[in-house]
Image 1 (cartoon, rainbow, N blue to C red):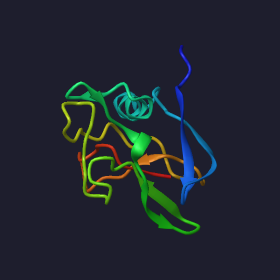
Image 2 (cartoon, rainbow, N blue to C red):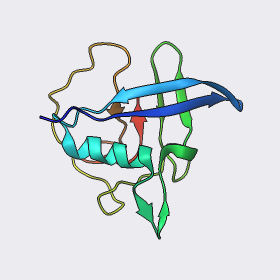
Image 3 (tube, one colour):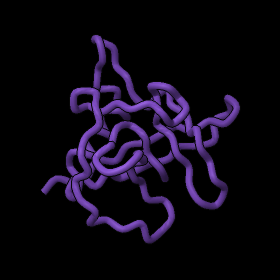
Length: 121
């Protein structure tokens, strides 16, 4: 069996590089969700022939000692949505993984079956 993909964000604050955040995507548990995220990390997904994805995205919501939310490369404010599945929201796959420790990656959405490009860590 193939290993899960690992992707990364290079993080900067105020134009100053502060490090790289590496993330394992659980393609063995949520393959569609993992592939959506992976393609936005690599720039493989294209809209009108041009790659779009997380390269220009920001963390628009930061709650100290709790989480960061970002990935809205459409509007930049948490209201944008895009997926590799026709550009629209895609359904939840399952809820097998539990958020029982810091550093876990999850989709941020506005309710059931509204997954797109936003994530929380």
